Amino acid sequence: MTVHAPAETVRGRIPVTWGSVEPIDSERCEYRTGDDDLDWLALRVAMLDADFDVHEPPELLDRLRALAGRVARAVDVE
Image (tube, rainbow, N blue to C red; front, side, top):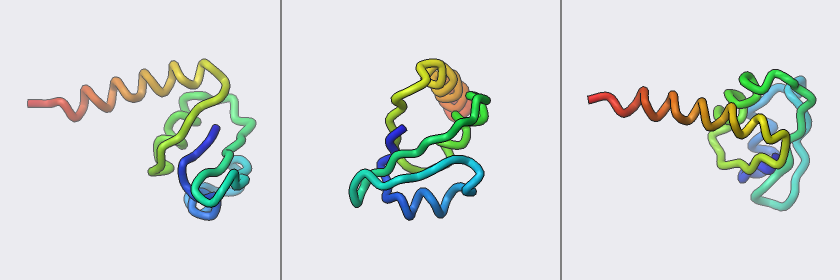
């Protein structure tokens, strides 16, 4: 996935055991992981405190949508 933050910033937010981070340019980086627990991966990328684009797997998008829905419902309390 592409993370919209400098590689050094992202590296400072995740342990090296979570995957590799390579710079694309000064403001974006590529985050790769072999983790197949997509629920955990969805939480991890949400905690990066940066925008990101998921390129694969498509199932991760489903997990992120579900997570976004739960968070939206939690904060939409009257």
